[in-house]
Image (cartoon, rainbow, N blue to C red; front, side):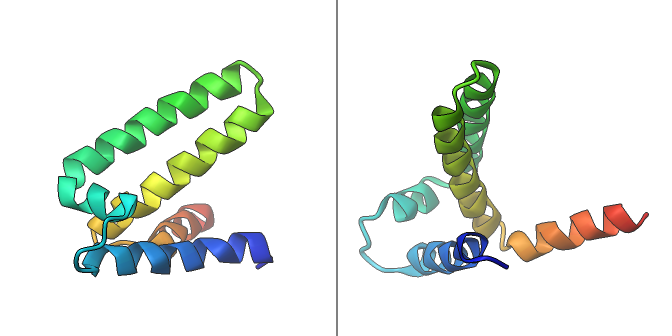
Length: 97
């Protein structure tokens, strides 16, 4: 795993720590305090913004929106006591079928 993709594991750990941190005024903590439905809404919004940027052919904005989507997806997974390893296992199982 290269350094850039390894960062996703680090980001998962940061998100996990923010979920349980007390009196943390971070954006991540705010998402968790608003609940799963709100986090899911943010995932949907970011997905639409990513799709629009991609259709417009705006590479820089596509990367930015993909980053936002992945971040919010990681928060949503954590809110459901899941992680990227769970997603990877599912993808692997699908690939082997």
